[in-house]
Image (cartoon, rainbow, N blue to C red; front, side):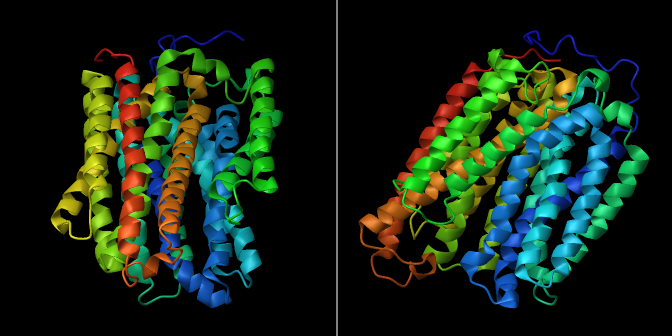
Length: 489
């Protein structure tokens, strides 16, 4: 297998009909909004699910954990499978599996069966996410790649923002089961639209199924490695990091990824061609992506705790403030996508990471008396920064590979986002917990405002966590400067 050098030799789209690009995009966007909303609305429903099945909140978190494990494990294999058998086919099957899992969750008679149903639901979700980026990019002509990714990011932002709001309002009058039944309606619409407006030849352009057998060994080894990695990072059983089990888990992760890398470099048809990392822009953009999500996820994790537990703001008001971040991202993403198609991606990578560094630095100095308007403005521009760098970064990664690899690489960009978020959240939460513990506070977050001195301990941990986040943001800015100064198209 030859080492890839550029995507310039790919099919430039000649001979393809792009007239239905927005109808096809709408079909995919509906599924994106719904699948992302389903992931965020679950958090709001956890308490109701726990009460219904008579289990603890700690046990019910497996509703979220199992979803993260399944999606992370199957993302790459499903993306590669889409490159082999057809992306539209994987997308439509995924919608059916997702809907079946959602209905099974709603009607599960026991918590164990609910978890099994969540596995099914997450499998369908992973199928859609794995090929979604590739399909959206393929629907648009090559010179509009940024526009395509910007539109997709807007759909993701809408899903992330609407999920908690829909769940919060629905649970006021309906049981939690209604959430899972309700999401099957837009999924059914997405399925019908996909059947009508998605052309397999277009969304799977560049594929040659006769020369691309599926890499089962790579798929299995990578899935196991990612599952062990995510469980180790999340540490759901709260094991001591120096314990035998944790050390063995870390060693297992290293061993599994070593085996995976060696296999992928030897097999003639790898699931993910690791030789892509020989391309400087691909390697730099992937590094920036992981670092960027690690640095930005601290806000998503800690700002709600800051608002609700430290400031005593209602959950509804806190949700409204966090919505501003999604609004900023949703506004900036299409702007960055459209403009980067004409001006090149590098200016937006740099400006996005620069703004992320600024907003993180401002957040670092939040206190219990910081005016709420400052918090709101900071959250909005934090979202803008994310939209500015995420879209051109994604475009750089997609643009560095052959069209035939769009499926697995689109899945890979989503996987790097998930891994970056998991790492960032684990680091931020561990820092805050450790600093508070060192100051003698090992209490639930809900008790911070009522325990004398706990607020100061939380603020101290907050400062350390956001100092690390700021450092990561600056490193991401360094990566952004190293991306190639792509010429305007």
